[in-house]
Length: 413
Image (cartoon, rainbow, N blue to C red; front, top):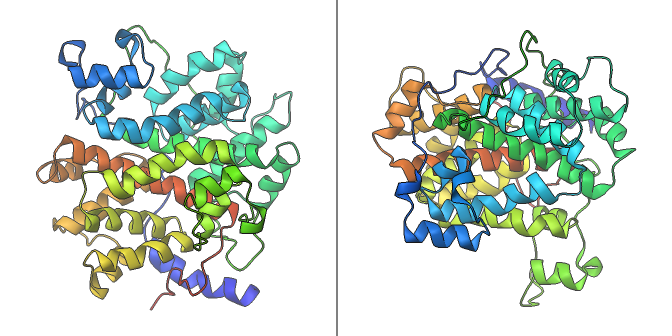
């Protein structure tokens, strides 16, 4: 195993190149790039969708939700999992908000911080504890030793798209399997929502005066290691067909065909309550978004490569070729955007790199994208990249192993 690990290092250095995790504030769009839908703009289609989702009072909709309403199909794909993570996961409300706030801070998303700070206070966090969340896992003063560990977990996912062995073991000493899965996905979901809010330029709702705590230095309590679990024992083992409950069998093989089911689905099926809403997001991105197959796979392959997700690369590089990519296109994705190039693929790759490093698409890159893509497509670019950033964090941290014959990220040339 050690020899395999050493083989990975050269290609990782080459792959990441100058990609570094940002340690300064992200430059959030100064003005909304996609304006939220106003009450006057709500059509009968929007009102029917709100009724379908059980939203009774349109006046209380968040600005980010109003942006998403400009793309009703996206709302149906995104909101079930967002609602699961934000309200009904197996985590306590307090721990859910600690993870959400820390992720918003790391992503420099003051909008998401402003949304979650009142929720955190409503479940008992004090202003002093909110400052500790911002200060990071090395700040003293926590009563429950699990809570700075949760901050550490968020920091490691932010930097490395992976939870370290030490942190995983420590948190798992208090959390069961479902809670471990929900903790990773809480950070991953909030990362996607923060990247989207930053890039769209979502503004705080009227009357919400919550801001980042003042005079708290920006520090990340983790470092990039590149460690992955390919070839080792999975932390969350995939369910074997002999262990499927009727509920799981209905999810994974509804026609009882006996077909082979990929390890990622059998792993996530360890948590049936989470599986269904997360699967809606996955299916939306892969089969219902406004992006063509080649654009979608380019985004997924690049974020998978940056996150060093061998499983994601093994699944989507073949899909990219089926969508028309050549060997040269695949190598281009591995190497990243060419400096100074405004070619379409380079602009998309640059957008992914900026989301990964800065959690926001820069003005110049957004403007170039906006000449080719409409608002719904721009939202789909953000959700596709963020959604598979999420998947990479989970695949890496759960230790999902390659399928038989699967080829992960190639070594550097």
